[in-house]
Length: 180
Image (cartoon, rainbow, N blue to C red; front, side, top):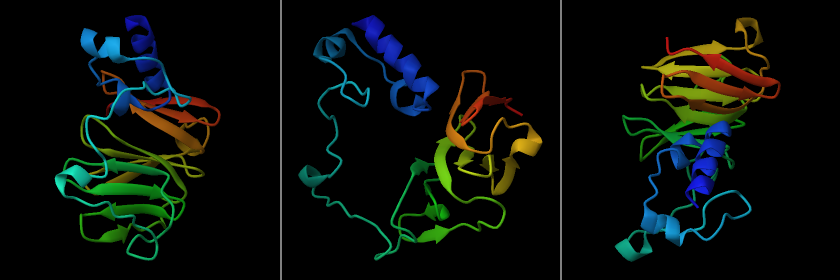
């Protein structure tokens, strides 16, 4: 059973889900509870937190373009250390501060966003469908595309290794960006 969990953790890193599985510590008791994987490759186990919050007196709110969200779709969601929720959509990058949604300026190429990743230095990595990958660090944005060495401008997933190297999966292979 432990080998299966270890394999799933490695597989998750390849597909850019490092934050979900690679940080999970599985005890022997938890391993005994693991029955199998579902069709998505996730380990079947009971929820430790109710995402609706109904037992804690909270209620779920669906945001869309009728109540504040500038678009009806979201391709990726990430939270940075300062508490902002970032939403990647085909309409661009959206920042949510808990009260207000703000669509970021897309004239620099932050459009058609497919994936988001917050690295160990609390930088927001933004993978686009047509413009490569960008990193936002303290409000400054830097973009890498085919002209800067990307194998493809079509980003699919982003993750980081223990040395701080950023791996960007594209439609034509993987690009590695060093920590600096």
